[in-house]
Every structure is written in C-alpha cells, then in structure tokens.
Image (cartoon, rainbow, N blue to C red):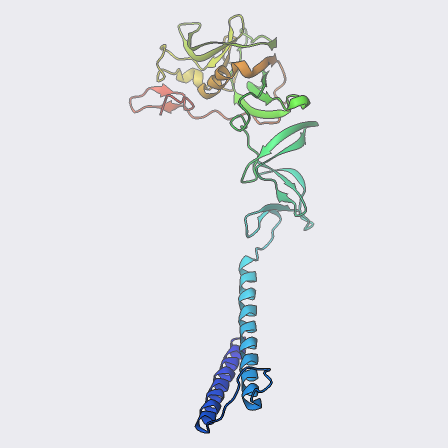
Length: 324
C-alpha cells in the first residue's frame, strides 16, 4: 500500500512539472489557452495534463482513505469471548458458548443484568419486570447495566411500602408498591437481629408508629431510632451503653447482627433503623413471620459492616450518619 502511494505521488509531481513546463512554453509563445477541463475552447494538450493530475490525485486520496478506514476498523475491533463482552462504545452483552448473544435476566459474578433488544445489549437506566423464583418483580438496572439493590432513593417521596421481617433469616425485606400491581418492587434489604431463644419476636401483621430518636431499653441499654411494632416490641438500632452517645456502641451486641440476639425487638444498623423511623408514615404494614433460613428472596441478605473504632478505643456503628 505504501509503495503504491509513493508511485502515485511521483506521478502527481511529474504531471505538475510537465503542466508548468507547458504553461511557460505557451506564455513564451504568447499563446492564449483555457485550463478548465471540459470547456469548449480548452487546449487539448493542457486538458490531457489536467486530467492526468486529477486522476492521480483522486486515486492517491482514495488509497489514503481506504488505509485510514482499515486502521479505524482494526482499532474498533474487540475480540469476543464467552461471557460478558463490551463494544467499542461501552455497550454490554453476554456471549453464550454457541456464539449467540444471551437475552433476559442473568447473574454474573454477583451482579445482575438484563439483556434485551435487537442486539441483546444490557438494559441501562430502566425498570424491567423479571420473574425470580416464580414471582414477577419490578427491578431497576442502572447506568452500568447492573441491577440497583437499593431503589428507595429513586422512588417518589409518596411511595407506599411494606416490611417483610423474616425471623429465621434475621433479615428485613422492604417492598414498594407498584400501583395496582401491588408491592412488586424489592426496594431494599436489611440485616437484623430478632429475638433469641426464650425471647422470640412476635409474629403477625402490624401498623407502625415512631417513638423517639433515642430510647431506653431493657438492661440499662439504649437504642437509636425506635419505631413501635406492638407493645414493647420495636425496630431500633443495635444497643448502646449511654443515652445520646453515638460512640458508646456495644461491640459484642453489634457483632451479633444477622443472628437471633435480641430480647424480642428487631435490631438494625443505624442507617436502616433511621430509614424505617423516617418513613413510618409511608409504611402500610410490617409482616413478621417465621419463614425459613433457606427461603429465597428477591434480594440477598446484606453483610454486616465492620464495626467502627476511634483512636481512643470507642466503638460506633459504621452506618451512623452522625459518626465519621
């Protein structure tokens, strides 16, 4: 290709040289001529030279464009592999072993995607109805194509919710109402600690009301963001040793999160206890049920975050917005 381009450049240069020589010759002979190709009175000799120059220039330009297009194509080519692939412009798709693109919902390395459309690209910034474990749910897939696990911050402020407290799993599922379709939106999941043996948490369906940002509890302990379920049974944070002291968290009790450890209440990380407290007016009901450890849910049980510790040895909840 480079050799061919050099040959054309030589031809162009030679043609220009001949062209200029003819002009000089005509000028010396006081000749009048036209150089516009195709004109009625155009000098045939000059027109021949002009045509040669034009042809050589066109071919050279075409070769250059072809060469650049070839380079651009190679640059944009991405080798396809079995699994998740990304196009040059960032669109994701999943290639099956048979070379075809996957369509529908799929879990990949802990993340969840939904592939759809003519090119089976991952859905981005959209809601999709997906059937999980035999039940249809409305899920949201974000700008990176991954399913958003907490959608409470993108739902309208007047959204209605219900809480499903799975005692055996020590987990709370928050469902948002999807109009006439019911509570089909898995809005978020929370890790919790329910009643230990001998102090089991009640079961049933209840309406909630908020009590206080700090609340005295059993055995000289206190908790944040107390919301009443029924009687003395509350949603609240893991217990603290001192009222109003965000850095007096009981380390032993915090490390029990995710296990049955309370005296009947439902303990939560501060962030989640506060969310329930702040949204009590939007929560239609809380359903507390035994469930089973193996029960499938549309969101996995969150992992407990590592407890926070200050330089002087005090402990705090890492999700507490009042602590740094």
